[in-house]
Length: 483
Image 1 (tube, rainbow, N blue to C red):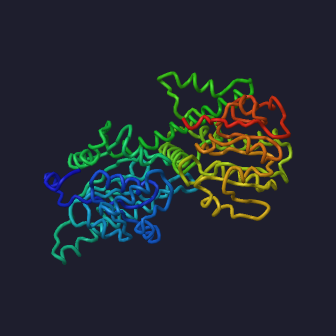
Image 2: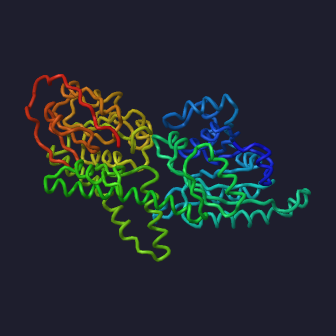
Image 3: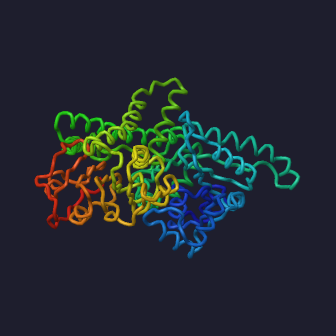
């Protein structure tokens, strides 16, 4: 942590940090900084969210987050507030973590970023280091600086009348986040790199001191370069996922195994094994949004990004192909009872934003399917989009309850819990033993041995080696888990 004397060397009087926005990025960042020893003001204008945090409860699920919240509310290192202006005045380092939702065009909606910039301008009471943490397109930092200067000039007469003098100095920096939902706390404390986009030595020194305890590589660039790194990273990872999904379609066509193909690719150190897991495609708040934002930015500047458009197209087709696979397995879907395991867009989160599972649920609802849904954390979020309807759509308390009377069971999120299911119990609960696995959690041969007709992605599907209409052998299969 930077102490008061160190800050003084850079012309900064206070050592408090304000994190503006307490969402999936802001809250882990604020609590991570508190764990590093900083006094952190967590500011959000959502009064209900702040009240929940003050009561000691995180408003979303993230492993490790609740314990940090409990610890640093007690220590006083983390103070949630809905008074954004007061938090700005009370801190010298400001992390901007507000939302940047997407417009229909693919362009990010930066209205929250602009609003924060105006509020900062109106509350400059000393040097401020303003750090973009939200994912924003290149040149956003330039706009933030311009907005603050413009509105700060408008406040100058008021400052003179109050005897507070000229507009205080400030810097704008970019520090893109690489926090994966489901492991955001782990990623904060064990990053593979920290990217700092700065335009001044003072900003660089302050940010380096903040992140020095993490002992990881620190890359210092210009602000616009740092902004672009985040979008480029997510677009590249999206490309890897769409690539292996395209290869999985080829594997199904020629009778190859995409898991073995991915293993062979991943052993090449130039490629690596991560993000080569075939399935029903990527979702969530970041990958789809950041991919479209980069496409929009490139096209706005006359850059051909046809490759990225194809990455998006392949991902969008995954749901259609998954439904086609279901029709091959079940023939007529209407009137069938189907168990759905997994609603979150990925494991270890309750986030359902752009979750592929919800697109499957929507399509099956339109086809007249009776749905029995289960997710360890995301049921309440899904219920806001798909309310429970007796006899048509039911949220269940366990995978086994979801499987009761089902003609098929779908695996749509690779929760570790699903890798430890008692398949004897599942077998006994189902009407017909068909599993359509959108995440390739299990070895087909083991599922066949357990008496299930098993359909997965990019692998040959087949009938079980023995059709058990009675009680299945006691068998608990171990899932592959996440890679």
